[in-house]
Amino acid sequence: EAFYAPNQVIEVEIDGEKVKVAKESGSRVEWMEEENYKFRLSAFRDKLTEWLESNPRSIVPLDRWKEVHTLVADHEINDKGEKVYTHPLEDLSISRPSSRLSWGIPVPDDPEHTIYVWIDALTNYITALGYPWSGSGGKQAAWPADVQVIGVDIVRFHAIYWPAMLFALGLEPPKTLLTHGHWTMDNFKMSKSRGNVADPFKAIETYGADAVRYYLMRNAPLVTKSDWSDAQVKKHYQRDLASMIGNLCNRINSEKLVAKLPETYRYRLSGSTLTLDNMGEVQSNEVNAPVQEMLFETLSQFESKMDTLEVNKAVTLVSELVERANAFFTHAAPWSEPDPVRVAEAHFPSPFGHPAKSGHANEIVGTVGPLRHTTGSEDMDVCAANVRLRKVKRTESGDTMDRSLYTSR
Image (cartoon, rainbow, N blue to C red; front, top):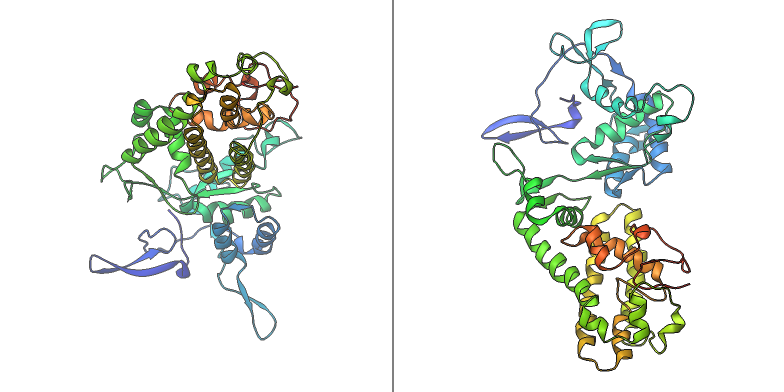
């Protein structure tokens, strides 16, 4: 339930009947009058504007930041030089008569009224951390939240009402509100009555948790809606994970291919620590250099997309890298090359291991590995990735990495 001001409602025709619906949600509304307690939201317009303008990452993606900023700060200057705001910031009704809402929390000292459920729900973010706090440390240190993840239909509650409530309490708002669109099912809104509700447990049973996780990350742009399709899950599973990533990992770690490598190179693959000097003539060249360059460009771009919380774009970068690496292997055809050094040069720029930059190689393994059709640990076991480095965290060159595919001092 939510109250809407007249400017937040439009009239539409549904089944030949003219009705009023909320602009924000499209839900049908009806006129109602009752006595409520109110929160003076209008008193926090300047504070909300300052918060938004001082931190463009306060709401992600930028399109939704702009929407909220328009609602809060958009104005014109009249003939008297006064600000006239385009969107009134109406004071917020925060209670309901207990006669029609008896199950909620009573308003202190007034049992005739019950706290509006959204006020109760929003404060749970801090009461779950023990608010009101005494002293410092403990769970209090968890606030403000680094990122709060919310759906597009409740942006107004979290991006206007919630920060204003926190300002009233003398508290800081979350550092970032990550807002996402709805998930649909075969391009239709999920509905129990329609029966088109996705069953993640069934999908996990069929394809595995990592495959489902990959699909959710790859196909969830923040700005628009995301669509769940069993056929698309299967397609991504077979094409991206089994055929692309699985194939590349199998090619790199093929016993026949490894057997054709120079003796010193194969010895490095056993996990023993050797320096780059032991590689002899194996080096970067015009054949493998473009793939190496793309490898490290992808890592930088991946980190950038993750920093801006654009997970789907980050995962797409990895998929493109794997596709390029597969194409490189097909072109280089090291399995048909008689010269061990030439075989090693084809093997050299593998995204699952890099002799000169083994720290970055583990980053790529930590990035790509969990997205395959087996579990992340199994993938990285195949690639012999160091357990200590199985995460997306930059490792400085020179770190000693026992059990990594390639090692350097």
